[in-house]
Image 1 (cartoon, helix red, strand yellow):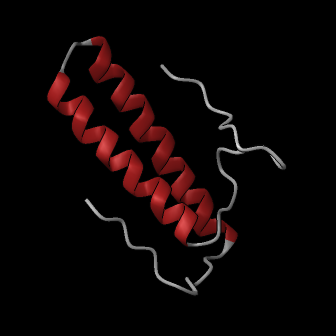
Image 2 (cartoon, helix red, strand yellow; image 1 turned 30 degrees about the vertical axis):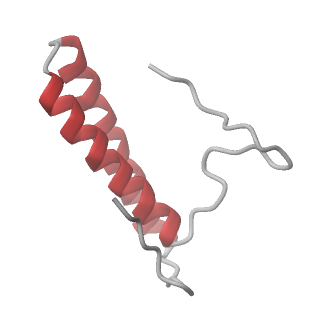
Image 3 (cartoon, rainbow, N blue to C red; image 1 turned 180 degrees about the vertical axis):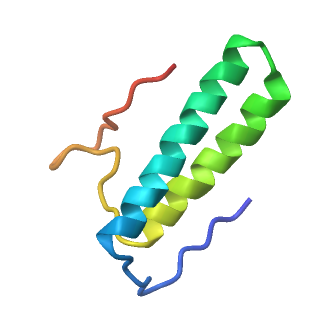
Length: 79
């Protein structure tokens, strides 16, 4: 799979990024619910959906989502 981010991506207004963040939270909640039910295929699909939303957020103006400033170590918690 190849992810293509356009060079010179247009930046969305802050409200659009907030909406995308809300979608990401909803997907995360649904993914956790599916994981609790041991529903492997829905978890996989929701992982893909979450990745797509995060990629869209990054491509449209959200920078350094997972990295602390000045570090190369991701600041995330695995579930």
